[in-house]
Structures are given as structure tokens and as C-alpha cells.
Image (cartoon, rainbow, N blue to C red):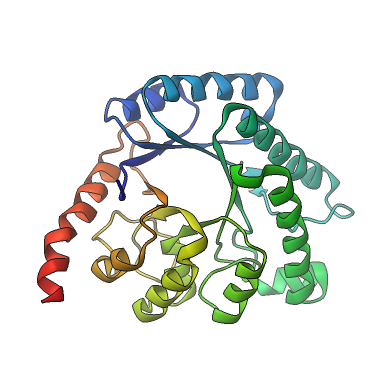
Length: 277
């Protein structure tokens, strides 16, 4: 039942077992480049088995966030950066095929932090960069079907919060992963616009990254420690979606901040009733 106790970890077995002791209902693997080798993919497959054997029904593989000390951007040029392009395409295709075989989900970032200046230098215009991103998202959608979802970024290449661009995204009928802190930062801490964006996209959202923020930079705070109005936000979330708590941890072997965030969100039920009177 939403919200789920959703936890994230790498494929490291110590992290994995620390999370599983709390009996999560959703588990998201955060992969890296080393997980995309033949041995790495075999290990990832084994860890998926371990999570499923613990009774976790909802398993997500987050595509590698970095390659060669840079973000693993979909909008990478095949001509200018062939190695990065080959990694981006090859790794995403590999984990989508694994997800289909193991009946789990893959989360792909539509973009990361690429600023407008970089986009124009690479592609000539924001529109040209967005067209490339849409082309690649369409390809991965066709390849993965109901096993793939796409997450919003801070970059204008693929961000939530702009009504016109959101309607364009909806026109592609993507399954969406909504990172609430990313949108809040894009919207400069405006809770009214955040709630409107969440409500507008809700029918296509299948997964949430629940994380707080002050609305100025990527800070990944526990829920209740930032400026997001969680009482209002919770009312417009899609109850059929899954979620994890994507909190920055001081110690990757201790997910207490994620557990605290889950308890905080659950505690809002009574507060919401009082506010609604």
C-alpha cells in the first residue's frame, strides 16, 4: 500500500543485507559502470534473486549514473564521444534485457545536470538536444515496454515543471519516474507549481523518488528537513505508483535516514485530516 517502504542500495552485499533486514516492499539497485561488465551483470542478476527471495515484489534497476568521470547522459554525441555513447547505449540495452528476463523494472534518466550552455554548444539549440533525447527515450520505450521508466532531471533536456513540455512528454505516453526534489529545484522552491506538476503527470507516473530539498541545489535531504510541503504533495501522488526514499546517507551501510523519512510521510495521514477540516 502506498507509500511503500522503498529502499535503495548498490549491488554490494553488505548494503543489500542491511536494507533487507527492514523488509522493504520496493528495492532499487543503484548501478555503476563496473556492474555492466559480464561479471557485473551476472552478480546483479544474483542480487536480484536475493532481493526477490526476501519477498520484495517491486525491484528496480537504476541505470549507471556515470561513465568515465562524467554523467551518463542520453544526449551524448556518438561522433564526439563514441566511447560514452557506446557505454550509454550498451549498458541501457543490457539492463533492459535483464529486466525483461527477470521481470523487474529499469529506471533511465532522461538527462542529468547538463546546462543550457553545454546543450547549445553540443547541439546548437535546446530544441535539437530535446529531440535527440526524445528519439532515444522512444527507442528504449520500444525496447523495454512496461519494464522501463524515465526520470526527470535538473537539466532542461528532460525536466518536469514546465506545463508545455510536460504535455509534450505525456504525448509520448512514457512511464515516468518522478524525482520530487529535482522538480522542486527546477521550480526554485515553489510548492504551488510542484503540486500542479505532480497532479498533471500523475496518470503516467509509475514510480517516485521521495526526497526533500531546500529548493536551491541537489541536496537530497530526509523528508521533513527541507522546504517541500509534503502534506500537499502527498494528496496528489499516484497511489498506484511505487516509491523509494532517495536520501543521501552519511554511511551507506546504514539506511536509517530512509526509514525516518518513511515514518515521517506515514505520520502525515493524521495531519492531513486535520488540515482538511
